[in-house]
Amino acid sequence: MYIIKDLMSKELYTLKATDTIHQARDLMLSKHIRYVPIVNDDGEFVGLLTKRDVLAVSISTLADIEQNERDKIEDGIPIAEVMRTDLIVAEEGTDLLKAARFMLTQKHGCLPVFRGTQLTGLLTEADFVRLAVYLMEKEGLTDSK
Image (cartoon, rainbow, N blue to C red):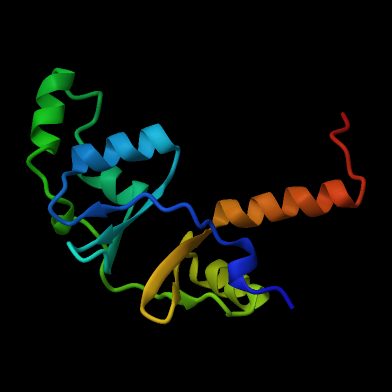
């Protein structure tokens, strides 16, 4: 039996609720991530910020506003105003198939993963794509035309 711990992303990039949308956007772009766990001063998990959350409060590049003005506005929006706090979380030892079915049926792109009260990783759609690629390569499937 495979468990969430076998597949989850363990390298976490976190921000605090007092950080800004601008900081979140910069982190997401530089690290190529779509989910950022939000922690308090003690490093305890308090919420999650998604790329969709950031896009929802961002000013469109189609707006007739200079980039530095957009950045200034986004620097005034704390993550606390946008982050999600009513989250479903999972334990490291949860059956991977059960987690996959849950994410698929509930349309969740990410599950924060815990060992007790400690955040230890994120299980994302990308983790399952990576697993699918590995399994297809193992079966000898190739990129054919």
